[in-house]
Amino acid sequence: MSLKIRLSRGGAKKRPFYRIVVADSRSPRDGRFIERIGVYNPMLKREDPNRIQFNEERVRHWLSNGATPSDRVARFLGAAEIIPMPERREQTKKDKPRAKTLERLKEQEEAKKEADAVAAAEASTEEAQAEEASVEEASVEAAPVEETQAEEAPVEETPVEVVPAKEATAEEEPVEEAQAEETPVGEVSVEDEEKKEK
Image 1 (cartoon, rainbow, N blue to C red):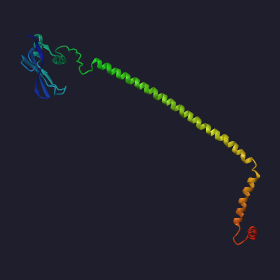
Image 2 (image 1 turned 60 degrees about the vertical axis):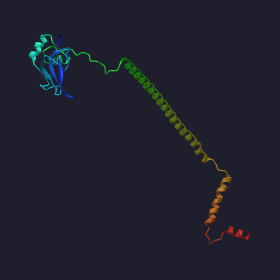
Image 3 (image 1 turned 90 degrees about the horizontal axis):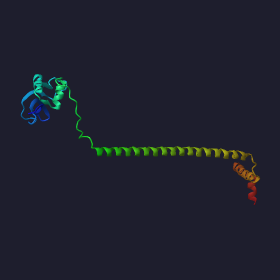
Image 4 (image 1 turned 90 degrees about the vertical axis):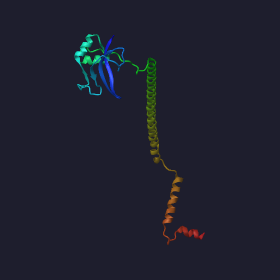
């Protein structure tokens, strides 16, 4: 008969309380046991001295008689320096994705990185094109200013030229009309008299 030092669950729903027992390895977890040698209350804080309690003398007795502790009880006994601290075994990885899923995730990450790289390259080319366009617009804007300055130079030279005689007489006629308008109402001008005679 192989003996185990293990935990036996008690307590209410969602409020566990464990007894540390020596039992036959074939008996059920909460079933028949040979001797109760301690208690474990996980509801208490880790620093609380009442969290784990056991009879050290009886533990040593059962260990000398060939009882093997379960993983959890072995950690308790290792912390109490009754036995050497056991190495932690690698935990099951059922919560981790499987190999094919990991490969698929890597492919998706690589595709995303490539897409980001392509988008960054496109953005940089667009920025370069925008910079070139702004430089071209600046040069186009600068060129008309130079042309207008070139056009202004001949315009400044034109007032120096002599105006033809016909244009001068046309300009003088409105002056005569303005003078005719300025004559007072009571006075009759010579021109008005000539018109009346005709």
